Length: 237
Image (cartoon, rainbow, N blue to C red; front, side):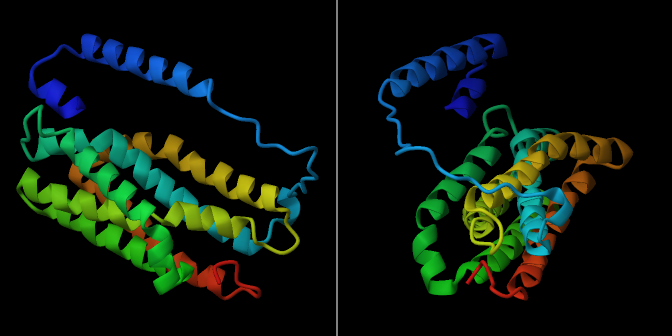
């Protein structure tokens, strides 16, 4: 919808104001239907950073790599398609749209894929697919071909974060809530770091070269799965 609105030349202030009004209306309507799910006081174990297990740090590092990449793709895909590949204002936002659509589709089918391949393989293959898709998107000269690469990246990233979060809650000696909070908290830092990191690298080199950082991080996430699977018990089993 955003791409269609931009393609029709609607001014950005009007576009953002309309989007804000729609989001506010949906939020107000949805909050009235939320229910309280707590059944009572729950005991939560707290993780101490002085004795954080190595496997928890490895899972957090994988989450950091994926979140950084997702945040950078959200902020820089349209800029890359427009400035580097010459896409029009109606086509440039489609890069992030196809990335998000592929992520949504494969995340909804993630359970079936995980049951067939296993948790560790889904993360390993997903990171590898994302690295390959991003490499393709950054090397092809056509914005239309680049869309296929961004869609592959979305498919590759789709199931990694849910699996990493779940694994964080299965580490012996660490409470479920503390484990998930540690992985998610350290992982979400990637959202803050990603966009400015790409901007800094782009200033030093070029946007295309800067975005290759995401290829390296996707590959790193796939490689770090081996660190997790070597632990006993393996939280990805």
